[in-house]
Length: 224
Ligand SMILES: Nc1ncnc2c1ncn2[C@@H]1O[C@H](COP(=O)(O)OP(=O)(O)OP(=O)(O)O)[C@@H](O)[C@H]1O
Ligand SMILES: [Mg+2]
Image (cartoon, rainbow, N blue to C red; front, side, top):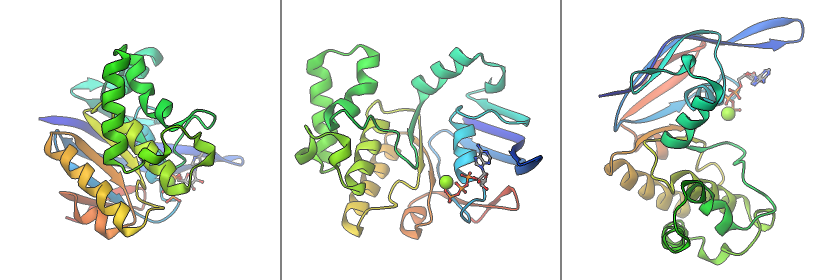
């Protein structure tokens, strides 16, 4: 089943007095359960593309369908609903609540769902264990190392087991061993049916994906 379809997507940003196309007539089809890596030079538009797929950024031309729904036809609040119900997002700058502790950051998406404290605790503890950050539970984000923050961001993104996980350089500041454990978590999520789109420069990460695309000349090219 087709989960996401982008057709003829063009995105431009204002650059001084002019507009510059960052993405141009871009097409992408993703089936439910696919895992996809996106590579490409710094500044080529990878984060822009993820933000579009995640419903965070509007586009100028083309169409995007999610589960057959035309996302550009949704209202702002429907789009927020779309994100909340379907998508986990690990952004490049993590977007964590810096003055809250690790537990609170990871628990947040479940609190919005209205789960009981007890259920939330069980689930958060499981994630903390899987990501090997139990020792950080009560610490505020501002006291964590880069790699610890990255893992908290991953924990928050996957805790609801979303249909689609978008991850922007999720292993960028991790050592090999921690990266290995993150990749294991991703592949177990994938085996449970989650669709993954991962922006990465790292060949170890992209080799774990079923498809690799390169974003170049404002378009996606299939590498395999
Ligand atoms: N809001 C904005 N206004 C103007 N230009 C922007 C805006 N957002 C991004 N850009 C520009 O669009 C281009 C693509 O940015 P993007 O962040 O998508 O690149 P990227 O491929 O993710 O790069 P990196 O690998 O460094 O993260 C860059 O030249 C960037 O400066
Ligand atoms: Mg980026």
